[in-house]
Length: 333
Image 1 (tube, rainbow, N blue to C red):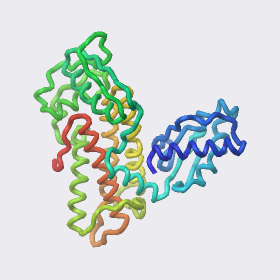
Image 2: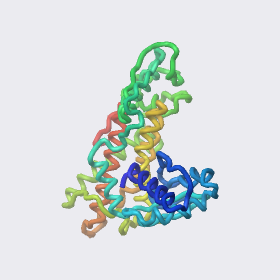
Image 3: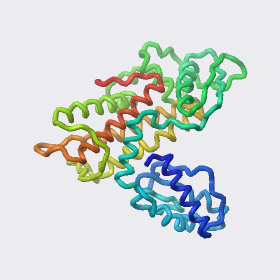
Image 4: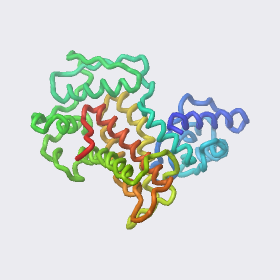
């Protein structure tokens, strides 16, 4: 089940509560579904109860209590918990997790219609950072069904803070990252830090994470198995890792947030939002990667095949995101 499908599921739960006279509200057009925040649990969370509380004339947590059984009884949902003032935290069945992986495998994951049929005018100054940002925005807007047109004209409506130095010596990939990763109101740092291959460099982590997914596929093939979407949480222990178990959830949450990150980057003309999301996804993948291959004399299991498919899906998202930013995703680093 993808975030878009789950959003529709949440709205259907609201509709059932209204039809049965439990709530007296107008069913909203959209339900926001995101990975759980601090204190949350499960695969996704929604603030729909907080959104409806005022019009329902009830406390948000009471609205959440009304909606909970309607969500919990849905195919593909295994559990719904209420946290905080009324957030609904949803845990999906393994089949729903596998569905997300398959959706990514089909291609164009995260592409939507937030800007369908719209023309987005980008009027920029003669500045290298503005040029690079506009170039990325054109591609990101296209993922949401829109078309961006770039012109050097007044009044300017896209003016990121210029770089204080020429980024060209960094090379094309590091230069673009240096200009795109900071928010538009922040001045980019043009330093050799963008070239070092260590964990302190976000660009390195993103590209390295992608390369690791390629290596995992190769190593699994040498062991005689390939990826197959399925139950990634089964027996997910990592020797020496505290609190074995949350790694798959973190990666699933990052992947689930990809459509939202693309939509926000497109509507706000902010490729930095996509860049930061790629860093989060890479970090989640690097924490998860150690569960993919069997250890010692263990034989590959269905869980290993499922984890490999999830890692490969993460690699697809990382490569696609880097491509939207105009940055290469090498198979080896």
